[in-house]
Amino acid sequence: MNKLTAIVCIVSWSAALAFGSLALTENSQDSTLKLIAAVLALAGLLAGIVTWRRLPRDLQ
Image (cartoon, rainbow, N blue to C red; front, side):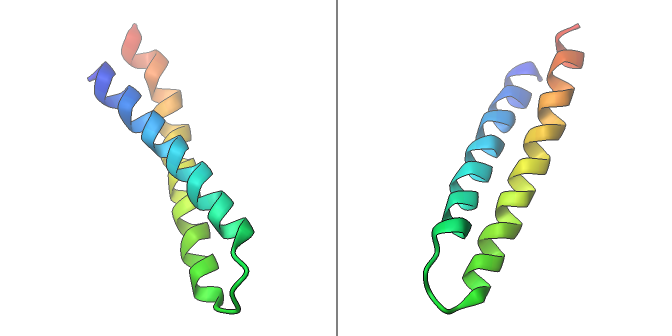
């Protein structure tokens, strides 16, 4: 379970960074793309925080 938690943590933080930068650098007039990217970045951030907090508990 430790490896799965660590993998999900890394993927979540990567998704948060990727979609966050996409939301910040989007230049089109279509605001739905920015909204989708921002929601995906927020989901990645929340999943990353949850798994980051869970990882030390799994190691004990």
